[in-house]
Image (cartoon, rainbow, N blue to C red; front, side):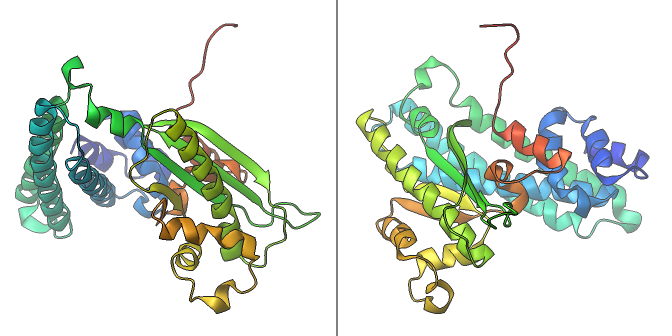
Length: 315
């Protein structure tokens, strides 16, 4: 809500700077900016759109957290305190989603002589949602809670894949990129020119995804040797729905008949539930940073998500 009030005073500034300046008035300005800067073109310099987008992004995040916590709540081997904290957390996150959903719906009707009352309601609901999130997190604080749940979250393997648009001007080949995370830390990545000339964006993304899947299977096997089991399918995010459809549905012959058979092994791992391909918006695809030059704002946004740390001094 602080960002909304600040935004009304600076609505004449360019979109990206408008978002940055508005976020400076929040409790966590860097998190606010990294979450909203990719939506700057849609927000422009509208305080209402800024607030609406912020709540919508928070709602999407809360829903994802709710889904993940619901899955984790069914894990075996949890301590009694973890079980209790998990049950409470699932309830709190569900309430958080409800509060944010009401806020999103109310924001679409904000205006007129009831503006102050409407904004007061939204502020109350958002505040309640934040309180619910804090209550959930507090349940897992302390060394006594360093058990199954935290281990599963920290050891979950997640990947992103992408390709550019015929970046090699000599051979017209594209660049594949992928990056894998455990917890919130990137630990394995690649940027490599594709071996073939692809005939479409869909094929290029499919080839890039196959490289990511190949590496994901290798990582799963390596982690298995280290006794870090991946019980759930490894989620790999890409920004091409057609490539995901081809991997999930082998009947799509007309779209895939020109793609080399060797790349279709991806289907087998999707069918065996070792891999799950998920669509993500292009601006949220972290592996984009490994495939092409980006605008300064986009580069910084993705770079921050890689959690790269600068070390001062020598070795």
